[in-house]
Length: 98
Image 1 (cartoon, rainbow, N blue to C red):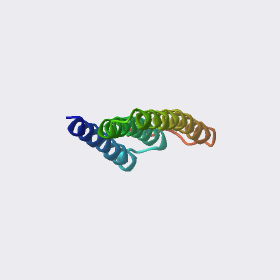
Image 2: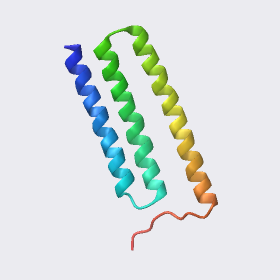
Image 3: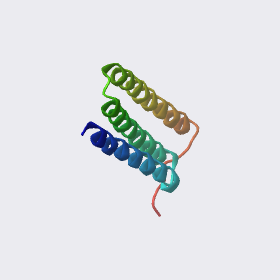
Image 4: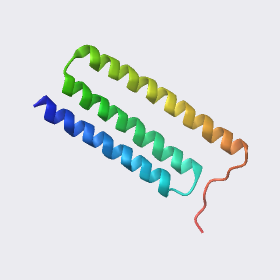
């Protein structure tokens, strides 16, 4: 039961990784690409971690995966903010529809 549930969570996480990659390739400017990557990849990693924790069923592994996810969640948001701030300071304008 937990293996099937873990597989569902992991597959949903992989689907979000693919959606984030599609956003990176399809969105027109730096700001929307950053938004797509940070949102999809952070949630995708969280779902993969939940799936892996359910699959193995060990509380210590679940704790380690949770800590990894928290570290990635904190660092990706800070890094995306710093990248966007540096781009704005360098004069990179947001995309405007024509």
